[in-house]
Image (cartoon, rainbow, N blue to C red; front, side, top):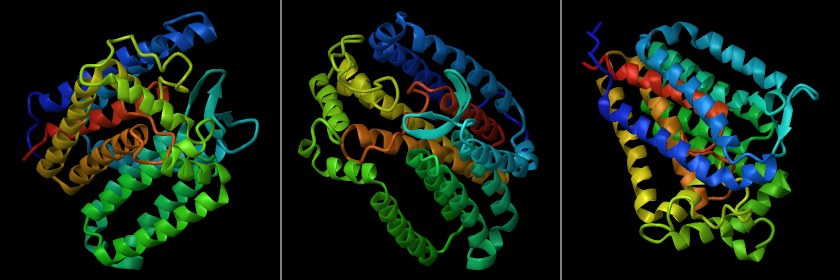
Length: 365
């Protein structure tokens, strides 16, 4: 076993810290008006975000100092537990409905989102599976079908909530990991075709998804309905210009852009901090992806390498979809911006996963 470095990757750790700090500032700035209107407390959302950030940082410090190989032993159990939670959350009266999806477990305003934890559990299990059976990955029935079957079973259960955004991130990160392990291009092309057909079926089956597609193509065809969020997001980003209107000076957060502290927080950031602020945040995410790939290349074993790829994939796919949505390049899917958007389950889960990535970086060859 390679000797651990005295410290984890300082580039990766610094980028994570800066993104988290920017997120806390932006959650307050984006939510203060809404929080005061709903709860009479401008700090309502940011106080809760600080609580989950503290929990997440504690989890990051733990996973950063626990050898990543320990998660190989718990991968199967974690996956089974998460499948169990996905079943429980669908039970009426147990699962909590928020935003039209039965995807939460908890009491009152505090809760967890099992689908968020499934993202990491799936990556842990796939990393274990592929590190042990990588030589069979080119064989469809023995090597490829079992892991893909688990991925799409989990996706199907998440879609029963329904939560297309989280399911898409899980599938995307999982496919990146499986492709990295040696998936044949012919198999990838076949599953891509099946995926497109399945996605079309999901869109046709739900009228609101079809409305999102049509509003994405032409948001002005329904400016007060399906196109409302995209239009208001662009109204936020456009006036930001190069340097922005100034921190705290957003106009769109005054009940024009729905839930500005979650899925569309990047719009508020671009409005207040301009192109420079938005580009800086994107650059920090690119640093995370760069150092994550570097950790994967330098990992001392295949499990560590696959795990680093999967965790980096979760971050990369989620950032790509979120920013693609808010700038009008993708249909609205309900994806938060990692470490920046308000949300306890997502923030805690991602910091835990990034702690594992930091630990892998300590064992470079």
